[in-house]
Length: 361
Ligand code: 5AD
Ligand code: FES
Image 1: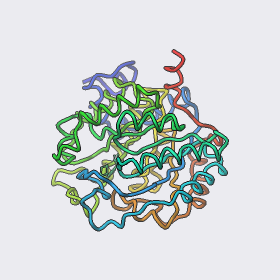
Image 2: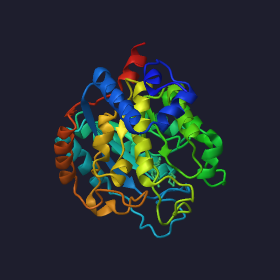
Image 3: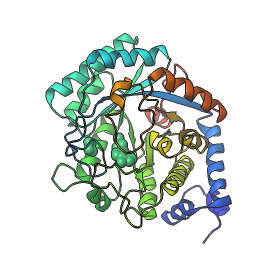
């Protein structure tokens, strides 16, 4: 087996190389994180971009086995922000000079919802003089719906593949015809074709997942030529079928370390994409997001949902910042990122350089 140094010096990684990197511990592990951090400085620079996250609604038609807001979880108090609350959150992001916002919600496919998103997107573009970038994260929709939202002004879309292994995808989702790997892949393909900057991602440390699966996920991101990636540790939620760790489950700390390595390796494989330091990292380690930024991430999504709803958008146990108002969040992030030697790209869209290059090419 080649030493870590030899692998890190290569331009392309085989699946076997990737598994070796994912297993790197101690000095080897640190070397990987350090190398990725350095490469980030050279390619996308030391700027971190904020995306204000608005959790529009926790109503969901789907039933993913891992997710706290799944349809079958009757304990969730379902909510929908009012239009005015969404617009106010967008105004806040604009005032604070966040380059863009993300509107996320459980998956809903009816016309009322589709038209509402279309309207809100148009209004947010207007209230920000076209300056606020709008990313949507609203699950699987039809080609026509994606096109309507794109025309209204959304320019990025996040849809995690969750796992690039169809067999594992099947184990993470109910077998009810609504949750198929093929449908998910088709949706991602549509988004890319329409012209969205397309983001995807996976959970790390889910039941049944192997290091080979994670290596394949990294190769999938590269093959699919993705523009943005968000991935974070899987964390059990009490009111889901995956509520207790399996006997061979990785401890949370190991899922956390593995997530940092995934970020670092992906930065080495795709130097100019946008990679998010996800909130789930912070659920395990209070400085989780900053550590991910050091290891290669360049995007942070501060939660700007009004505080009274945050408790109900609980995808997993111990989700952080559920009782803070947006103002408090941005202040604490500023200070901590300064410690991570990063600069915040205020007032900039912070588009994926990778997407821009493709666009011109
Ligand atoms: N742990 C970690 N991440 C989760 N997500 C959903 N449930 C969990 C969980 N229990 C992630 C999924 C989804 C994103 C919005 O949140 O990857 O795509
Ligand atoms: Fe809502 Fe998975 S449970 S999309």
